[in-house]
Image (cartoon, rainbow, N blue to C red; front, side, top):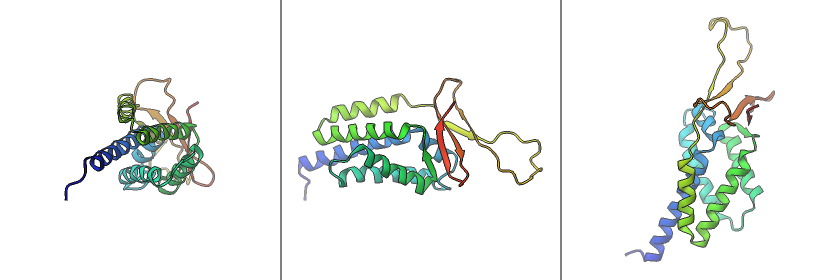
Amino acid sequence: MPVPSNMAASADSRVLFTDGVRAALHNWPVLQIAVDNGFGGMYGQEKADWLVDVVQQYFHDNADLEQDEVEHFISTLMDQEFHTVADDGSLPQVCVQLMQMFSHWQQGALQQLSSSIQLLTQKERPRAKVTAPPTQSDSDSDGESQVMECESASVDTTSHLPHPHQDEDGWTLVGKRK
């Protein structure tokens, strides 16, 4: 049975919204750091892809979402799946982007949605990387935990990429670079 054209268009537009969610989340430095550095375990990239699907479905399943609801949802997923708490102020920004794209999708403003996706993918930030500082001796282990430092993959020293660290409970926190 052929699919009516309006249903096909709706399916195509839903794919476009999913692409928007992917662009927003995959360009989010907090998620980049979590995936690139194994905070989500050996299947971190698969979890990031799953996160895109879950977030887009969350928008479709819940009418009239408020920003704080979206923030709480994504924050909970980041905590559960990546053991990461984003305290750098970027989560509200990502949620605003997602809500704007969903609003464009709901209104049928697919050209605006496409433009938003294009802007996000054009201004991709350099990937962040976490490295352990060099120690006096790799064989010298005195039981101390290593401190992780975040550095930008580019030469730009004014970058405001998040700075991950662990608190006393063992949670990975991502904050603003000072």
